[in-house]
Image (cartoon, rainbow, N blue to C red):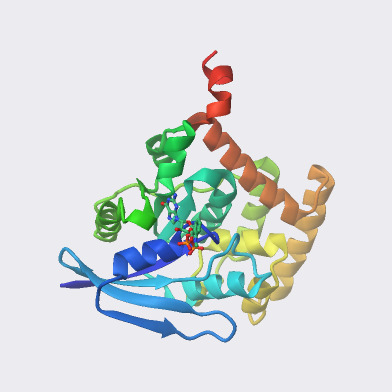
Amino acid sequence: HRFIRVALVGNPNSGKTSLFNLASGAHEHVGNYGGVTVDSKIGRFYHKDYTIELVDLPGTYSLSAYTPEERYVRNYLVKEQPDMVINVVGASVLERNLYLTTELMDMGVPMVIALNMYDELEQSGSTFDYLALSRMIGIPIVPTVAKRGQGIPELLDEVIKKYEGEDKREQARIPYGRVLERAIELMEREFTNVDISWLHLPLRYLCIKLLEGDKEIEEMIGGLSKRDEIFACRDKERVYIEKLLREDAESAFANARYGFIEGALKETLIEKSNIHNKTR
Ligand code: BGO
């Protein structure tokens, strides 16, 4: 009998609470994971031969360190290292919801996407080739209607499959474009021979966040002996990015994420109002 620790991450109103209640509802144990201003529920239940511990994290639009919710979710993922994340994505507001997905991808957390409110998507008359998106990003996507419990067993099956390594795909990297990729690469070089394994974060993520000016990540690496060189490179690259792209680094990364989402949806989502245009 195996034990899988799963964290639910998603925007407010994506249906996380419904999914949590339906999945863990009538079962064993509901407790609290302590937090000062925000906290999260824990449920434990069985699925097939597994005990699944599900943590419902606070709803959040992003994983920057601006709001208590954002900080809490990011710290939870870094410190608690759940075996798997279920990213709950509201199907009717895909573009906005997928922003968080791109941040989770940067963090390199293993995840499965619950494409929730699938009923609303179907009713809207739009068609979404979510399997094509899944192939594009290398992440399983399972349609769910959380408030009715639909799709939840299939979602948990995917969690187990991924946990057991049956899904051999690598999660895709968000491509940030020539200018930002070059800055990331130069930052990564600054970390040559620097041990960052204790941070439990991918180097690429660290470099992206430093370039974005993330204060929490900056503090995390403040004790490194090479900190001065790293920060000097960061400062230089931020100026360079702003000069070339005519926007600050933080906006440049955010816009590149939205650009990736827009491109991915252009190929996979036909909204009803657009069907006429696209099929001609
Ligand atoms: C109300 N499909 C549809 N159509 N709705 C869903 C689904 C789904 O798959 N899943 C959840 N909802 P939360 P967060 C409500 O509460 O789980 C609905 O914030 C209402 N309430 O029922 O709370 C769900 O935890 C009165 O809707 O999300 C809920 O992520 C009128 O989406 C809402 C209409 O779900 C948010 C809706 C008194």
